[in-house]
Length: 334
Image (cartoon, rainbow, N blue to C red; front, side, top):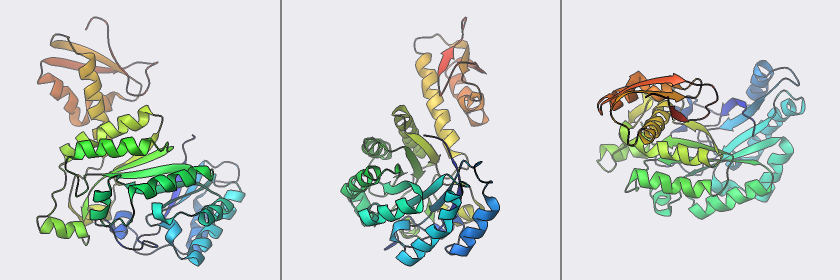
């Protein structure tokens, strides 16, 4: 599947039948009101490339798009569709709830030029979904995913790490990811739970009913999910919420980091290097990684180098042509 940039429009909370424990989409998106169709037209006309040159998608994120009032949903699609027809965008991407999918809605999306549908699964444990006020079951995720794929859309799934009700965040994240990957999505987004002001979670934290993950716990739980998904050819298109001033201002607690994905990928490098060093005597070691991956392999602020130094290895990292992904190779003589 080709990678596409997106021109994103946020419809915060619009269409949602209720608000989940963790959700304040206005804070997450930095948007206080949904866009008007006229604003969609204006921004598409201003920001999309000329006809035939585009690799961009128009995206409607932040709410439950297919649960919007039909007239408003149709108006947004009608505003975006001409730019797909004119080849100024390659398609339209939407995110929605698993229980807001029907054959009629999928047909409507298809006719409007929608090419990708992302489902906010969040968890595949019914008890966790119920506790977090999601209003749908894991079975609804499976049913909706199958319908989306049968209708010919690219399927994306979204999951959260560290939700209330999970006894072991690492085990729960991996179990959820296994079930979601079994649905064969093309893309996956992974979000560690952040506590934002004005949410049910914020109240639970104040009451001592919920303790969010630490940054270290979130990395430990999320890194294996990235590895699992990518190992099955599923593209992980986001890890952690996008860094934003309004998000930082609204943050009450939780494992926030502006480069959370890099922390997770650095952890995977640490594990790969440790496996390659298995049985090697401590001392100077040079590890080759793929081009462009040295800083990630070394870890933020050289954290991986320090971790191996504490174990007696003087680690140097270099880049080698021909290596791809997170391959690591011990160089001769080390």
